[in-house]
Image (cartoon, rainbow, N blue to C red; front, side, top):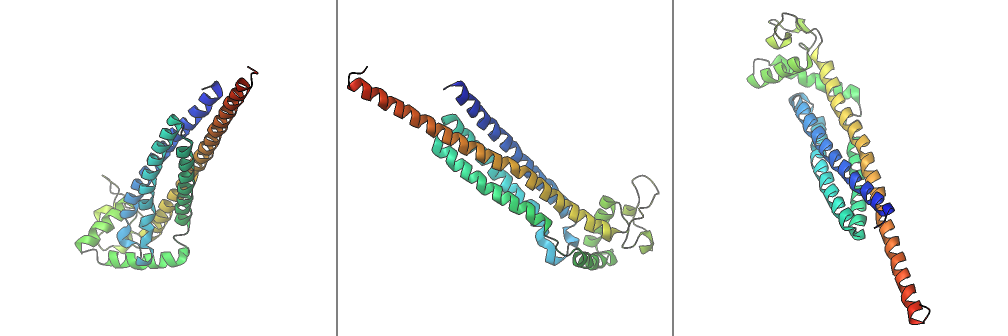
Length: 240
C-alpha cells in the first residue's frame, strides 16, 4: 500500500471515529430532551403528545449510527469494497432519517396560537386541582423547574406554594407558568431539530468519503489486474 492509500484509509477511519461520536451525541441529546419533555408531558395537550416521540426517536437512531460506524471501520481495515459501498448507502439512509427527524421537530407545532390555547386549558385544569396529589407534583415541578408561579403570577394562589419561592429565600417567582411552559416545549424541540440537522452533515460526509474510497480501491485493483495481464502477455510473447 502506497502513501496515498494510507492517507485515504486513515481519512476514512477517522471519519468513522467521528461518526461514532456523533452517534453518542445523538443518543445523549435524545435522553436529555426526553427527560426534559417528560417533566411537562402531563400538561401537553393530547393532540400534541407525539412531541415526546421526537427525542425518543433519536436514541435508536444514534445506536444505528454507532453500529454503522463500526461496520465502516471493518470495511476500511479489510478494504472490502462491497462493505464500503453498503456502508455508504446505509449512511445515506441514516442521513435521510436524521434530516426527517430534525425537520419534523420544527413542524410539530404548526399553529402556535392553537397550541398555546390548548396548553392553557390543560394547565388551568391541573393548577385548579392542585389538591390532587398527582397534580400537586406536576405543578410544583413546573413552578420550580421553570421558575414561574401560578397561571397569572403569585396572585393566582390564595396560599402560595413553596415551589413558587426561590430556594432558601423568600423571593417569589413573578412569571406566569403557561407562557414559560410553551416556550420550554418549543425550545426543546428546536434544540433537537438544530442538533439533528447539524450532526447529519457527518453522515453525508462519511458516505461520500466511503464511496470515494471504495471507488479508489476498485480502480487500484483494476489497474493492478491490467498491469499483471500486460506483463504476462509480454512475457508469453518473448518480449520480456
